[in-house]
Image (cartoon, rainbow, N blue to C red; front, side, top):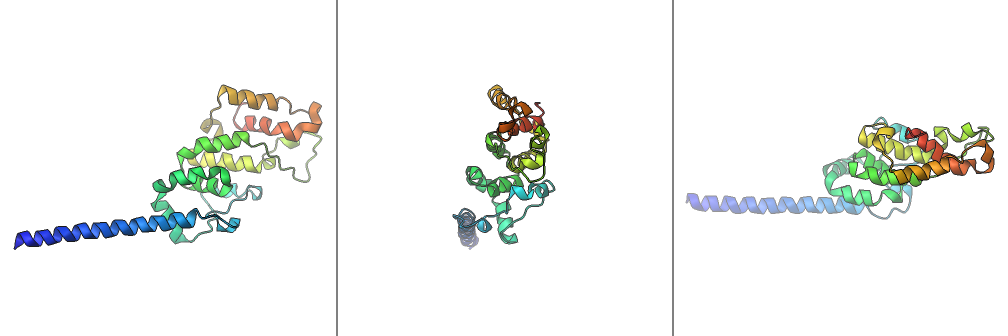
Amino acid sequence: MMLRIFFYLLLFSIFSAGCKNTVIDNDFEILKSNLFKKAADASELPIYADPPTSDYEDFKKGKFQFQIDSIEIRKINKYRKELESSIIQRIDSGYAWVYLAAYLRYESAIPKIKELLLKCDKFYGWEGPDYSKTDSYLEDGQYCDQMAYITAIEYISKKNISKAVKLTTAEYNYLKSRADKCSENNKDSLNIFCPQRWLLGKLGKK
């Protein structure tokens, strides 16, 4: 009798575990489908991201503008490790994924974000500054996109960017060769070469 009861209990536990795993698998697949569907517009992405609005200032304090409900956010946290590779793969397709990787503090995202930072030469060109002066090209506010990358790396690593990012000799030489052309002697090209001079300053490599 006891052996039969034990046998039924064993079957029940195996059946329950199987059902539980099926529910978990389905839950994860639904999350992936919702999270990685092709977004028709930015409002369908998991996090709002628009560097020119200086929204990266918010996530310095751990504030992220989610565009999904709290249930989905909890699921993302629950499946943090399982989602990692898929989120990293999408980092170069939009800032929403950079911000999400920062939120989840994926250290594996840092090399990719560093690569994007070093390649980024965007200069905003706000109205107001005197663009005949080199200093106007060296203000943080002119480099919204780069600041978003920098803030993401600092948030993930919990280090200042000058300590979180180390340049290879080749990377430094490339940036320096362009930064050296950022001077008032080269006024027509300040917006082209000053981004690298500014970046070297942020990295403590003036």
